[in-house]
Image (tube, rainbow, N blue to C red):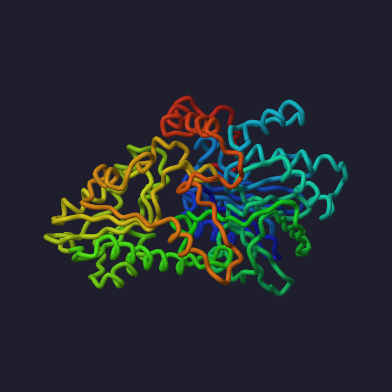
Length: 504
């Protein structure tokens, strides 16, 4: 999971990209990077860390130009070293850099072909570098001093024929402009916005609409599945449908957890979707626990607040804030190891004892993935004096790996895999547990103003919309991307790395 942004404008892009990445920080807290273009030169700053830590004033001054792209990263494929921070860059053709959100499901096969047939060198294990080199290879085939919009779209069409997976891409071609495209299934989000300046119209591409809002850009629309948009350096917008066979199946987990509530993705309000999740979850609790003895509903901050409020209202019980969040602790779900996640929960949340003492408490969370956070929070609630602790998840059980850019690669790390609700409840220490039904989740997210009629629900249903995810692939993925595998890679080191100027 990552956040990406690209700008073509008539004023310096550096601060705009920085601000957008700060707003998108929830999508990746491991690394950040910005690359800008000015008078035929590229300027890059990237490193591990939060946006505020990676970019100091001296770095911002060096990031010259009105055109640029940015990235915040949480590593899924590849390792978490600074060598794999994005954007990635190749000098041929033209000078090409790329920022990517998602995962390629055929990255290994592509890497072999790139080295053997395309004669491209790969410096890291990142599938983003693979994607960059596939795009570079296809652009190289034209052999022209300057690529036209039709050349760029033809190259993207060829890229679509070669790569598979869930992805949203923003690339910058030196001396040309910024390119954005989205996978043919529309799994990962990408929006385009515009604003008027005294010198002309400026454009921004981003993972979420909230990035546009903070910079004064107006949301134009989502980039469609299999569509490419190209904004040249003169500020002219070109678009083309580059993939022939498309489906519109956005990742439903964006609405459950990843996206900010003030974002609109595929013309669906994340906030409204979470309200409806709470309503339908409350209806299920009333059906299955009509004689419940819940005294208070308490959300697990922050993403479950919206749903929890609706649950309390419909059940007719009190809603209380029972946990105070330390905002300087990162999102535990996307932390790279089980031990670190468990430790960080205690650091991140502190209970208000008076809201728990002697009460039957219903804790509401957006989802239960590994169960580590849930078990720790239930323990905190009991330590605060709760008489009984019930648990409700606004999402169905996560039983299957998500391979499209979410770090759930190993089924063995998912607490609900192969277990019943009662078994999960015992494992996390809840007196009882209720999950949202998948049909209700889809109903909650679906909206009549959107053209989306189906979603990628692979982590709940085991149905992978790209049609190429086999049991052998999942076994290999588990071997490569489990917590243990990541720890071994980090111990061994990331391999070759490049030193980028402008360091600490």
